[in-house]
Image (cartoon, rainbow, N blue to C red; front, side):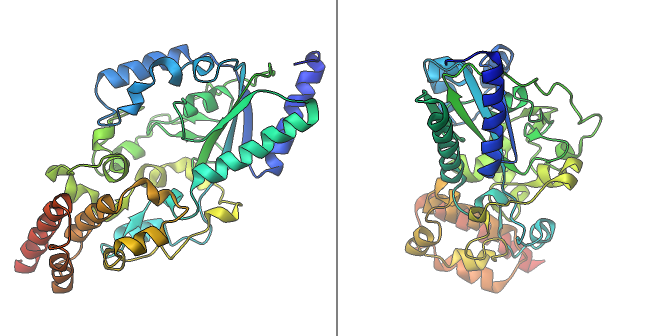
Length: 358
């Protein structure tokens, strides 16, 4: 990049201003040294905490060494985008209602991968328009990138005990995205403080005890992993603990006291679609595959197959209040379901029958 230090400092300031115009809540710039976090990642993988997410180990050092993923990368621009929909049904009320299907708040609107990357590309285009062509790539949970570590290093917050990034004035209800660039930009100071203190609310509230130690998550027990990333049979011991959570889980964020400062989304893309914030389990169970594909088009819900969707709903129905209507709805799907779904339906029916006998 042509230019002296004052020029680069002014460009960094301008990039952050442009980013705010694109709707980002925060922007920071960091270097590409992730040596410490690489060691933590390797130890986490060695314990098998990634479960069947083979991609976590498949890319080798590319995840922790940006210059290997995108050769020529000199700096990373990290950004946050608030996603909590202002109009969404109250989260705790939805969780407490055993008849409702709880869907993680990030998945209620448009697919965040597309929204975030689109805005990052526009920001990168503004940079190129201002100073000429540069090399860049944009990411948002879409490649082997240590997003939280980069955001922390860019000064955007600290990684909490639940392993999510937290900001004192923004909470944690936001997406992360990055621009890998070949610009040598001045970096922001990292966020070194940890404001979790002695608080253990996120650990205490986790339904499946997936936060096995402060700052350590065993994905194999995490409801987000079990209902989204995992395609197999959900372990029997964990099914009752999942409750009505059919896609992801927000409990640790809901319990975090720093989220009293969280700001709602200002981006229209994250408004609730198809009433999914308050839909009942039986309503969603009634969807055939065509309806599923139509209602989830352009949504992060497409991260699961229809088979996984039915599997998750069957578990939710098994955990719902005993009712003959629920039992009949489950039985009606037995003949057409896949073996994986049948197994979960039969578990749910047994749970319903046991409840009805009490």
